[in-house]
Image (cartoon, rainbow, N blue to C red; front, side, top):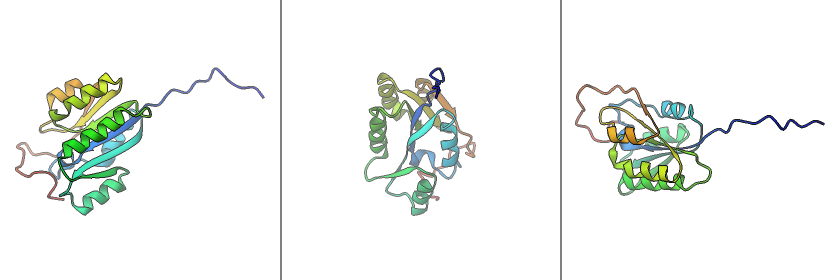
Length: 162
């Protein structure tokens, strides 16, 4: 039997997708987790898929997150802290090549910088209004999601409309 040694498979990037639930899964933005996963997987294969939610997240939202194939992490404190911990775990995983941060806030700039220092590619997915210019520019690639946001941001906070 002859073995083909010259055939090489193209290495598929292994992704960690981490979503800031309260800032992305807002009713007024109209963003779908299935769309986020589809866009991210154009860049590679999702090995880790996490949505960080706060303790006010409705059960229906948690169920939707799980049904979309994401692990739901319910933060009992600040969402930003649990998001950062999940991101740091992914950064230090040998099984992850690229970090996909689904967020809009510049508060995650240190995570982006740390990931790049550790040799990870960083992809940021976000939506207007409020998609940080600094976050976009610090990423290796950024993707703006289409949103159904009104011209003027509403006064609602988080996802209490779900």
